[in-house]
Each structure stands twice: as structure tokens, then as C-alpha cells.
Image (spheres, one colour):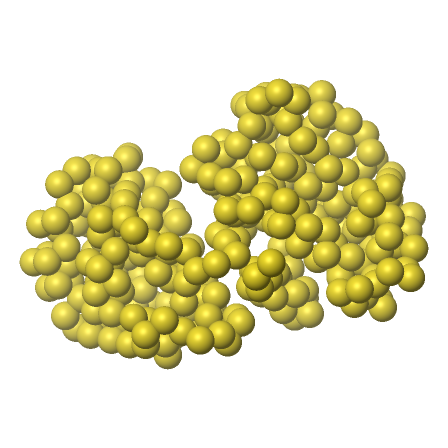
Length: 278
């Protein structure tokens, strides 16, 4: 079955530290396993006696079997998540949770939210109640509507190391090493070695996606403390919070790359902001 995703170890740490967010978008390569881990996490944050095999607890049983009134799971009807489904969710959440600490929702195949249903979700996302927590699960976050993506914490939730077979795999890793270890040379390397390889906006996007995958793989190692691929040894010194900030910067660039007319200025800003959050 393989090891669990490290994303939930990170979320448990945030929960213990009192910094847990209210809405999460998870891109995964195994939808059912991701759903099962979300359910386990919801048991964890609601049950004082939670364990991975909490079979005697009625609360955990109700969560696992999706019979708890304060837990709503939404699946697409055909190839769309309808506005009426979100309105039903809102009606369910008009009263406080009785048996659990949180009111919880899971949106499966979140890429099927359309403009109408996504806009109906915005109150949950723009005016978050501290006792409401939600998960949007998808196999491709790029297909999730922007109004949802921009208001969620986004994680790649893969169950094996993310395979990076994109055309700029090696270039992106060398770029990261220059940014993290050779800061004084980072802009020079970018101008003379990176930019000449990026012929159009699609190339830039693929390059950024490779950056995102490399930082994500390094974060997984940091959280799980598993054996690190030797290619990441030069940047293994990076701390978790620094990697998360790098991922956030790259995510913003990926969202804006097709609207930014000057690739060099965008990457220059990334180098400079990376220095600021080191």
C-alpha cells in the first residue's frame, strides 16, 4: 500500500502549533487514498483519544462512515458540482456542531466546481469560521477555478516521490542550487543559462512547475525524514518554513506567468524575494 503522504504530518504539526488553516486544496495521484487520509485527519482533530485504529470511539466511527451531521462530502453529479449542492452544504452548517469540534466538508474532484457553485462557496472561504474546515481534492489543481485556488492552502499530495520528467528538470534543480547556495551568482546564472532556454510562456510554466516539484520533494523528505534522493543533497540544509515560502512564491508565479510580459523581471523578483525569506 505504500507509505502515507507527508502532507498530513505537516497539517498535524500545524494543528498542534495552533496554526491550522481553514481550507486546503490537495492535488493527488490517488483520489481514494487522499480522501481516506483526509478522513483520518478529521478524526485526529476532533477526537481526544484518536489513534490510527480508533475503532471503539463512536465519533471516529461516525466520521469514517460519513454519518456525522457536521461532515458533508460532495461529489460531482455527472461532470459538474452544482450550486444546489453548495447551498445544501450551507444549510447543514447553519447550526453549530453538536458532537464534533469542527464542521467539516470535503469536495471531491474540485475541478468540477463551475463559476456558479464556486462563487457560492466564497463565504466559507472569504469569511472563515474558525470551527469550519474544508478540503478540496483534485487530480489537477490547474483545472480548479481561480476563485477557489486563491483562497486555499495548496499542497501536492502524492504517495510516491513526484516524478519530474519535465524538459527543464535539470535546469530547474541547478537554478535552485544557485539561488540557495550561490546567492551572489544567482542572477548571473539566471540571465546566462536559464533565460536563453525559455523560448515562450509555456516553457516558463514548465520550468516553474519543475521548481515546484523539486521544492515539494525536498519538503516531503523534511517532514518524513526518509532517505533523501542524492540530487537534493546540496539543498538539504533548507528548513521547512523556508521551503514552504519558496513553494508559495513559485505557486504565485505559475498562476501569473501567462499574464506577465517580462519573464526576466518575474524571475529576478523570485531571486530577490527568496533572499528576503531565507
